[in-house]
Length: 485
Ligand code: RBV
Image 1 (spheres, helix red, strand yellow):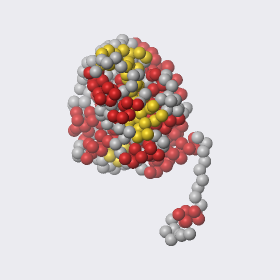
Image 2: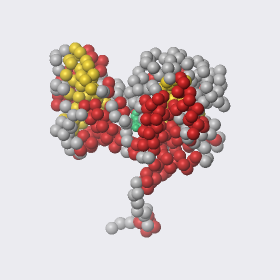
Image 3: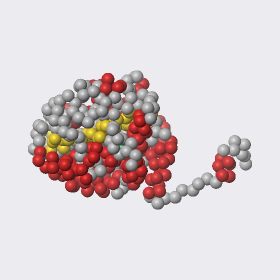
Image 4: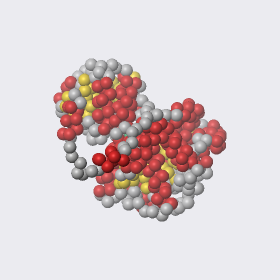
């Protein structure tokens, strides 16, 4: 127990957690060297969980070695209320939780996840635990962990390693979740999958049943890994479900990105020139909402069809070289590095605001910005003022990391309901296939159409919406190749 500053309350909290749905399988027998004792397959002589290296991060933590490390377990009650708030807005996920509670599809299985520790994620995590999984969790971005939620999960018995501002120990946390020797992995951005594959390839090949990936950037990486013949277990591309990318990526990113920009700046969007880099699902969602608030939207693109869509939505398309000169606010959503770099900062207007909503912080080249900067200060939370050598000021939000998660609370619960229902259903499929002795191909697997239909139908019915059904005659008509005028 390294810096167990809050040792006593933490212990009490874990014991108390037995009443929570997550507790039964979430609480591990304390392995002081970080190795969990409840393993039933993965060899304990493996290098996984062979001792816990020291953390690099400073500050105090609430920590029980091998079990959890969060900022402050005393925040658990605040986090619990946030989780309850999210639960009440995630009816599809809660419905699936109820449906499978008796069957306990994850009984005997260990699951490690790396995904933003938000109130919505907590509902997913506790659903896995309620359905029998032994869960370990880490964040997938240094600035997206909600400390109160992490505390509530720890208190509820989940093995969680995550805190806000975790730059130095990001991979340390992921490693602690791998100590659990997971049968299943759940990723957002592929950091967990990459660590398991690169550091523990034999374990990945032998012991891991399968995994899932949440986001566009992660699925790209996964497909690249599969194409290189380096994917060692089957992984569902959750991002590519219709009920994920047509909703989470568009409406979730749209609303939460604007939310993040407003919380970090409180500027008026009406009348501003708002530059969106990338008109994919995410960028188009941001553009839609910026238009709705009266901004003048400019889109930069490299794909002609995506550029054309923006033009037909009434937005202007230009190169970043041109957009840099006219923009008041810039938001990157491309998944590509160096979208905004030195020459762009040099031609920006005084007071330009720059942020990113893509998964990684590579889209804005802050090193190049630093090279032309005289001084820097944090002028508001999540808003840094860079004063350039020529006296011009540029404001960067959330250190160029996902502004929607770092400066706001991520996507709303209502839309994460569908994304996380997809996550859960894919893991149920993996667990069921495993229990039936069925081997899935070691590939990136697409989401079956029936899953999308089930999730969309359930979501609609929880919203009180009813759809029409085709009559027999209508069905026959649309399937009649010979029907004419
Ligand atoms: N995302 N999660 C949340 N509230 O938990 N918000 C956004 C949340 C996910 C979203 O699914 C997206 O694909 C991913 O974060 C990007 O890292």
